[in-house]
Amino acid sequence: MRAHPAGPRHGDLNALSGHVWPDGVRRAESGELQLHGHVVSSLARSFGTPVLLFDEDDFRGRSRAYADAFTGTDVYYASKAFSSVELLRWVAEEGPGLDVVTGGELAVAERARFPVDRVLFHGNNKSVDELTRAVGLGVGRVVIDSTEEIRRLARCAEEAGVRQRVLVRVTVGVEAHTHEFIATAHEDQKFGFSLASGAAARAIELVLLQPSLELVGVHSHIGSQIFDTSGFEVAAHRAVELLADVRARHGIELAELNLGGGLGIAYVHSDDPANTHDVAIGLHAIVERECRAYVLSVPRLAVEPGRALVGPSMVTVYEVGTVKHVALDAGASRTYVSVDGGMSDNPRTAPYDADYTVVVADRHSDAAPMLARVVGKHCESGDIVVRDAWLPDDVRADDLLAVAATGAYCRSMASTYNLLGRPPVVAVSASGEPRVLIRRETVDDLLALDTGA
Ligand SMILES: *Cc1c(COP(=O)(O)O)cnc(C)c1O
Image (cartoon, rainbow, N blue to C red; front, side, top):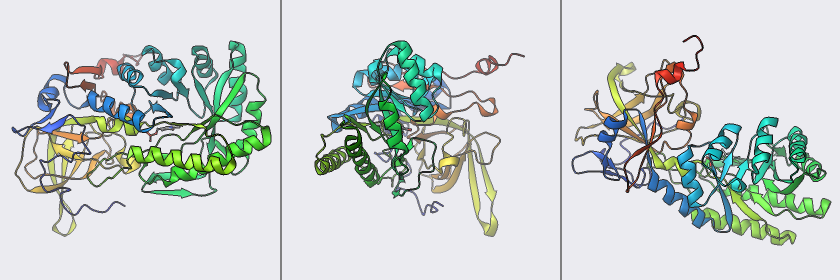
C-alpha cells in the first residue's frame, strides 16, 4: 500500500515540479498553463477534452540526449509505449532504432518508412504471417522467444531466400520494479528461455543448426519503471556468463548484448529516476569488466527504452464535470473530482497502482490544499486517474486539470470501454502550429465495426 500523502508535495499548488512536466510547460502570469507559449485552455477549446498534448521538442531532445548518453550502444525505441506514423518519423530523424511487437506495430513503421534494418521484432507469440512480413521487409533483427519460433522463422527465412539475423531472449532470473530488484532462480514468466534451467543454451544450439538464421546475440529485459539499476548489473553479469558458455560450447563469440528497456521516469515530485549518463557508463563498465574476466571480446550493447523516451513528453488535459464530497467514518470526508475521461485513456492506475501529478491548468488558485481523488466517468469504482491528489479546495466543474507524464502506456493502452472514443494526441512545439498526430475517435468510428449499425 502506498503511504497516505501527508501534505501538498510542494508548498504552492500552482508551482510545477520541473522534472515531472515536459520542458515546454510553464504557468503564465495569468495563471494559465502554457505549452511552448500555447495556452492550454485554448488548445483544449480547439481540440476538445480529454486531449493528450505531446511536447515534440521535449521528446526529440530526450531522444538525442539518450543517444548521446549511450554512445557506442544501439538504442531502440520500444514503440508499444506510444506509436504513430509521425512520431516514428521523428524517431527515425533523431537516431534510435525501433522495437515492435506485432504486425500492427510493424505496419506503423512501414507507413513511416522507418529504416527496416533498424527495426527489431519482439514478441512471445509471433504468427507465421507476422514473421513472413518481417522477414520480407528485411527487419534488422528478430528476437526469438520460443522453440516453435526457431523453426517457424527458419522456414520463413529459407522461403524468402535470406539469412535472418536473430537474438535469443534469455530470462536471467532478475526481476526489477522501481526501487527494488530481486535476483533469484525463480523465472515464472512467459517471456524468453530460462538461463538457469539450460533452456537458453538449448535454444542457442538449435538456432545455430539453422542455416537460414544468423545468431548475433542474446537479449534480456528485466522489468519496467526501474530506479534501482543494480538489477541491470546482475542481468549483464549473467548474460556475459552465457556468452562465455556459448564460446566454450560452440567456439563462437556473439557480437551483441541487448539489455532491454525499463528505465523509470518521474511521475510525482518525490520520484528520483537514475541519471541516463550514469546508467550508460555503469552498464559499459560492468560488461567490460565481466568480459575481461572471461577474456571475451566486448559485445556491442543495445537498450530499448519506451517509457523513458516518451513518458515525460505528454500531458493529458481533462475537464472537470462534477465535484462530490462524500462523508466517510469518524467525520472524515473524501472529495471525488470527476473528469471527462478516465480508465479508457489511462488504464495504469488500478493495475500498476500508478501515481500521477495533477494540477488545475486554466487558472491560479490561492485556495487551501484539499486531498481529492480524481476519477473518470466509467462504470467502475476502480476508474481512478489520481488516487490522492492535492488540489485547491475551490476546484469546480469546468476547471481544466492537467496530468503529467502520460506519454507512455496511456494512449497505447487506451480502450473504448463504455464506448467512449479514445482521445486525440496533439503535437506542440516551439516552432509551427499545433497539429493532430492521432485524431479523436468518434461515435461513427466506434460504430464502423458494428455490422448491425
Ligand atoms: C516493454 C519492453 C520494453 C520497454 O520497456 P519500458 O519500461 O517502456 O522502457 C523494452 N523491451 C522489451 C522486450 C519490452 O517488453
